[in-house]
Image 1 (cartoon, rainbow, N blue to C red):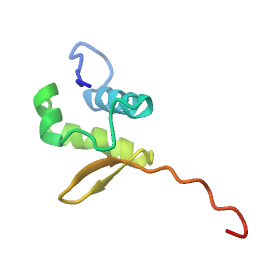
Image 2: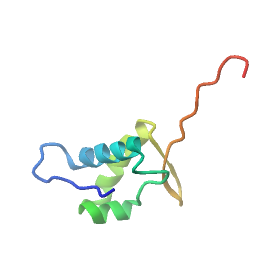
Image 3: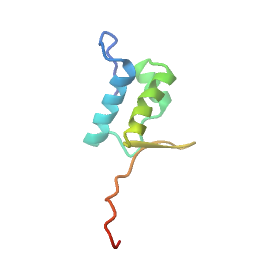
Length: 85
């Protein structure tokens, strides 16, 4: 999935990126690992900080998690534990 940004949009670029990544995760187009920050900066022409801000939104939403030195991965959804488990 290629991430693109509309520079004429009133929506901030980091939100555009976060929205597209979120959509890709929910549809299964992206995962289990997200493209690297460098890949996303090359695709979009945005700064590293902008891409990190977009990924930060997804981390706060619990959709992705980072593994230092390994990358950013789609978070594994676990079923809530039932009493007696």
